[in-house]
Amino acid sequence: VGATATVVSSSLFSGDEGPIETPPDLCIKVQELGVPCEHLNATTMDGFVLDVVRIPPPNASSPLAMPVVLQHGLYMTAACFVANNRPELNLATILHSQGYDVYLPNSRGNHYSLTNTRYPVRNASFWRMVDYDEMAAFDVPAVIDTVLAHNAAHTAANASQVVWVGHSQGTAMIFAGMSISAKRYAAKISVFIALAPVAFSMNKTAPIAVAMCKYHVAEKQLAEGHYFALENDKAFQEAASVCPTTGELCSAVMGAMFGWGNLSNFAPNLYPDNTKYTPGGTSTSNLIHWCQGTYDHDFAMHD
Image (cartoon, rainbow, N blue to C red; front, side, top):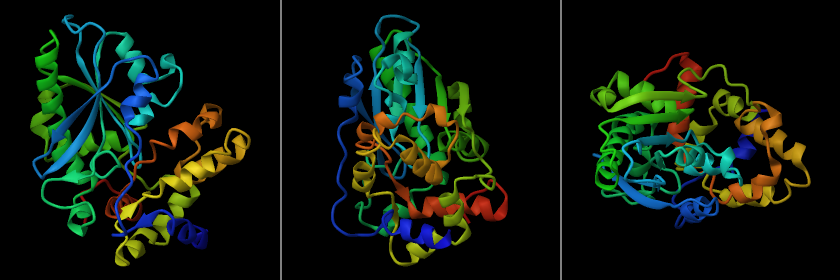
């Protein structure tokens, strides 16, 4: 298993080799579902420019057009909230149909948020700042302030609070931020909904993820100058192209990497389209931080 994790890692990690290819515009995917879409920038105190996809409410003049933030998890992009090709099956489009002002931020270091005002993307200092500590401390406040300002300017709701719906790492950002660095922002969150909440990571079961921590694969990759994980989306796209005809095999591979969950929820026919947008990547350092919780059995800042 350790050897498998090492082999897999060779296609998952990279360093300073050339530009990072930008995936397709997420608004294309959103608009294919029959709803409007626009991009906002949320600039953090440490210089990251986060791409935030907005699905405007159907009636901006309604005082009920309250802002809802849907924050994706580790490796992912905002595309995960519009992954199905039927709008009634996506959380983002369901909320839109109910009159909400919906915002989908992309966390620092994924393919849609690779701009920093201080460091170029192919720079080790850039990637050292891609960690859920910084996401909690800087991304959360920047997103909340940007969302509230935009909602006030473009709807009649003029909200003073957001609803935050996090998935996986998107929940850890709130657990960490509200307990330490961004706790003053608690008053700006009316409701926090945690989907697949995560803090302690020692009980994960995905074999490849377990092995990567057990055999310190990310640490070894970082020592070799590979500071970006899951840049190689093309490998996923090529593999996903056969998923509609080899559905169970693809689901098994995805499960080995990311966790199986309920196999009845897997939709292999959607893999070819969705791998255009996700996984979105993260820093090798961030993976080491998540492995730290596996080693130490705690939920703590990156040591």
